[in-house]
Length: 416
Ligand code: FDA
Image (cartoon, rainbow, N blue to C red; front, side, top):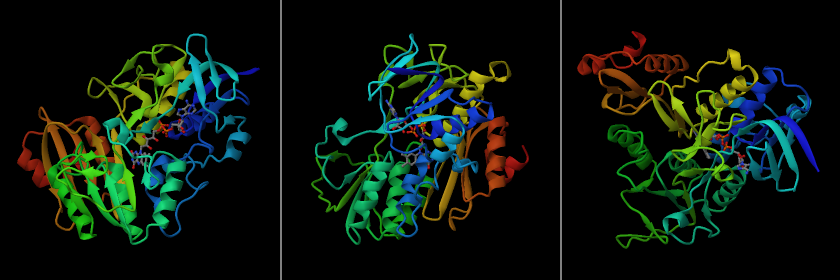
């Protein structure tokens, strides 16, 4: 028994949701598109899980954060998929794919054939066991990747009020979860492997600002420390009613290994998001794509990329002659407590800080490489300011005088 579709999307996360909307805009017909997801719900805005979802009062719940609400667009509820003739196969895992024969098999045993396949399988959270630490299957040790993880974390949070939590990892999952735990009146200790939080992006100055704020909220930091079976080196033991682990992710590409070209841990695609098999495309966290601006292949684990790569792939499939090269400016953001920042471009080269680090309202940093602005971080900007820094960073303007750049601060991007 099997069905045939023109387009199949494997995976039902952020990228799948944005692809679905784009398919309808390009004029997909009833019954042509099928989305298969092992999650039991229609695509949703995953970033909400570590933010509004964990709030003690009036937490965000579905259907309010289905895609594409994150781009201030339509909210695609299950009803929407039905009305648009899109087959949404939920709670079903794709078990195998034959990329040459254009077929796949699902966990229910169904064989599905397609003309075009879009891979949008995202990533999974890395487990402590993968670093040789046992015991992360304990009841109150939580990871956070999908809705079931978030439901579990929210339940454990409720039963840990006034208790102690240890957050392992200082990336955006760690920082956002720590803030949510504090708001839920839980005492938090953060254990970071690096010298400061968000070590891959933040400069020490930016990190110090946020860490000071967290410390002011009672958060303790233990840095440069690795975990050994839930006892820390230097013989320090931490009481924990709850542990949140955010130590990175690994793209879900195993279905395609040996069939498609893999690079930098992801599925290698060209500037049309097309893989080494011409009828197979990859979008979102799984795709390693050419960043035209930097002449380099990269894989990005951020929601803006998931949304935009999805739109581009659909456009390349449905209107190939009208679709140019994907020219993407890397962008990511995070929100915790009342803070909100965005970053555009590349964080390489020399750094210039600007703005009010003392009062913490609006501040940022530029990255300058080989005499050109390549990256910009901004905390507390307005919508217009974020648009301005994004446009300026894309243009890679020349910077002749670093001191002048520091003096001009945010104003520099307005002159570009
Ligand atoms: P995504 O993970 O969204 O979807 C993949 C889907 O495929 C899932 O539904 C999965 O179950 C399914 N799947 C996998 N294998 C399958 C199979 N074999 N068969 C069927 N289904 C399968 N980014 C950012 O820029 N700013 C932020 O603030 C945040 N915040 C944030 C918070 C939290 C808690 C998380 C987990 C992530 C973020 N992110 C983020 C990252 C962002 O959410 C991420 O980059 C996108 O969700 C990627 O979208 P994808 O569609 O590629 O994967």
